[in-house]
Image 1 (spheres, one colour):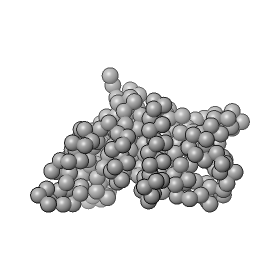
Image 2 (cartoon, helix red, strand yellow):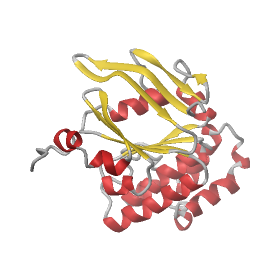
Image 3 (cartoon, one colour):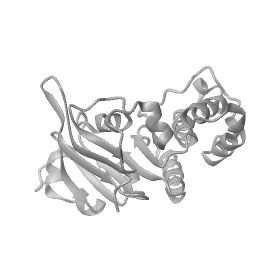
Image 4 (spheres, rainbow, N blue to C red):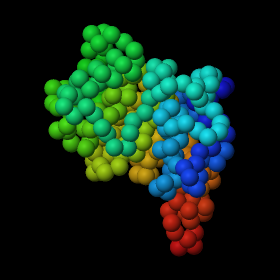
Amino acid sequence: MAPILALENISKRFGAVIVADSVDLALNDGEALGIIGPNGAGKTTLFGIATGTVAPDAGRVVFSGEDITRLQPERRCRRGLARSFQIPQPFSGMTVFENVVVAAAFGANERENAVYHRCAELLERCGLADKANTRAGGLTLLDRKRLELARALATKPRVLLLDEVAGGLTEHECSALVALIKDVRASGISIIWIEHVVHALLAVIDRLLVLHGGKFIAAGDPHTVIRSQEVAEIYMGIDADA
């Protein structure tokens, strides 16, 4: 079966810095895939290439069998490809409910009055129902991350790209977010998750990739990859014998 999302022979550089060097990535339908790597490895750039906010120097993006490399970001979103951002940036002057309505109406290309019920259900699912009328600018970090996820889900994604959603959270908050992501996955949405909080990642994913120097240098079973000598030396920054 063909992957639901594939990056094929992707290359990208910014000046002398190579962030992707003929990279291949394939996400299977229903899979949860994790990506780790040092800061500056190019992980978020790959998300930008997948969603259309960054143009690759070479290679192509294929979604559900269609070459979408030249498709605008909003058209990719409406086909079912959504993402969250590492730093949530809601419309701070709007309420939580209004933020989700905007995402549903524009991201899923639906009439505003047709999405109200679904948006209310999403807020309940994401633990934000009691904050529906709160201005987004006054939310805690955890609730901003919940809102970021709710906005992405409002677009009716088939594939959800998560960018370091666990960063900056307490252990309790992280556990709550992991439970929510597990629930999202159980609904049939395929996931790629970039994360530095490794224990949160391992609680969800089926497969793990390690990006370093513009290439994936390890891939496979998450626990096996994490214990590998190469990952310990390159990603963790310690000698394998330490």
